[in-house]
Image 1 (cartoon, rainbow, N blue to C red):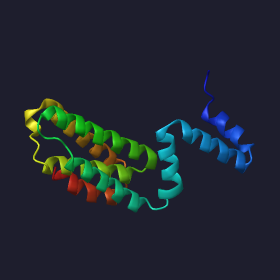
Image 2: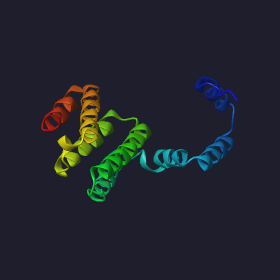
Image 3: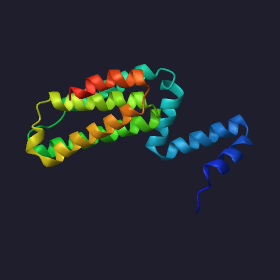
Image 4: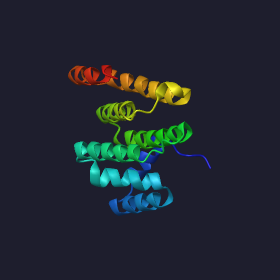
Length: 156
């Protein structure tokens, strides 16, 4: 089955009643957890972006506390899991400022944990790739915000 384009979907949805669109959204939310999470964000949390940013930072903190540091392999897997969550939240918000805050928080937490970044090439690569993403995201912000975030990012 070939998917319709966004333009075609938008045209078709403009002809539907509000109750029909609501039913379609609920049906869509049943099939994938990500769809349900996105709908939850849009309905309940999109109006308070600062609160959402704080809650995701708290989630990142909790995940860092539960990292199994007995072997670097488990550290790497845990870091990738945290990054998958951050990427998902970045897609939901679509906000460059939120992306910068979360990536900056991730890099700061990783640096503060005392995990030996130089001992494992993969962990070091994860850290440096997130720094690259961070600086790229900072460059997409307004000049005033760029200055503030760049000061914090240079400490890393």
